Amino acid sequence: MISVIGPSEVGVRIDLGTPSNSWSFRNAYAGTLDLGKRIENVQARRTNELIPVKTVAAGEFRSEATANTLSYTVKIPPVRPGDLAHISWSTQDRGLLMLADLLPESLATGGRVSVDFNLPKGWVVKSPSKDGDSFSQSELDNAVFLLGPAVRSSSKSIEGLELRLIVDGAWDFSDKKVLESAGKVLDWYFKLIGFKLRSKPTILLAPLPASNSDARWKAETRGSTIVLLVNPHARFKNSIGQLGIIFTHELFHLWIPNSLAFKGDYDWFFEGFTLYVALQAALKLKLITFQEALNTLARVYDSYLSYSDNSTLIEASESRWTSAVPLVYDKGMLVAFLYDLTVRLESGGKMSLLDRYRGLFNHSVDEPANANDVIIRMLSSSPATEGFATSYILSRNRIELEKVLTSFGLQLNLEGSTSQLSVRKDLTDPQRQVLRSLGYRR
Image (cartoon, rainbow, N blue to C red; front, side, top):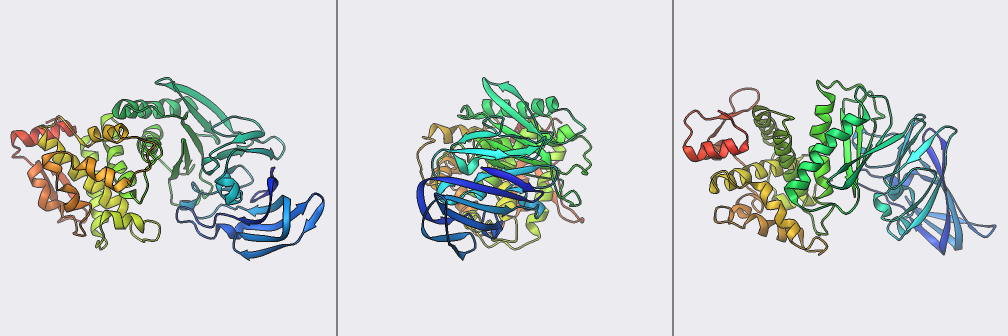
């Protein structure tokens, strides 16, 4: 039973199927630390007998004898905006609860459990699986619940698969428009990859609780669920267009990495390369213009130039959550850009990076292979890209776009306060083919 006690506190009572005297809670996730310190007032019982419990460390508890009932409270006030899409929190208006940081790890990583909610009067709770106050959940690490007095849901069929939307808050756009925007992106990726998702995708959209923050939105894709928190005070020129751009990134994670059983640190690919794929999707779906795509790449290069780089992409992935710089994102996206240009030039504009993704899903998606080995082999599958991984993925050398882009018909001006990426005037026919395949129309 999960009970909402107050604006920033929930109570949890667990009837243990197997008696235990030891419980460990998740202490870190996605760069958020000290989650175990939120667990308080832990009590263990055997039938009606109260058993003393000792705190061993933050989020680590032991009792003197085995118990069949465990209860405790969890303090979950909103924290840093960057953490809000990743961990549980609640306010007086709504809550976002995730079983992975509310339950002991032995349960959160185990089998199916039944979860009941005790909510304030007038509140409802919805999850990707169903609506109501009682849930039977498997894959607990990805179980997410949105609760509050005005939570609502709707759905839309895309390629025979239900796309579910759970929304809280008042917005300047309709729920129907959100579904249409996400549906277009989802449909495009279905056709691109050719692999049908096994679970229905769900989008949870709610206001970002840190409304005084400069953050405009925060998101995470867990399993088949996209958690999207938008600052209600952020000003977008086109709110639905902005949501569409967000969806190009987050919805792609339903496939990569969430539909793959790969092992290892390959954040450079499923984050950095996905940023570039999302840019291409936004361009193809006419959410942005060709020049806006070039401007985005120039901004990413400026960010990359602002810090030192002495790591391979694989090393950067291993230290993603402890690094102070966004190397996985910036360098990964720029390397994807160069790879895409290389494939397009080799094929006369007939092939691109996007065509390589089908190969990942021709590989057994359930096989827990080493991700870096499989992906590098896929990226090295043509004569022009045979040595690409050695030069850009496995190398510690800095990327120097200004030295390599001219061969593709692009030029980079670094003289101003910000870099300017543009098309050269003296294009060769092969370069024109490459750029036209990217979206250039002159």
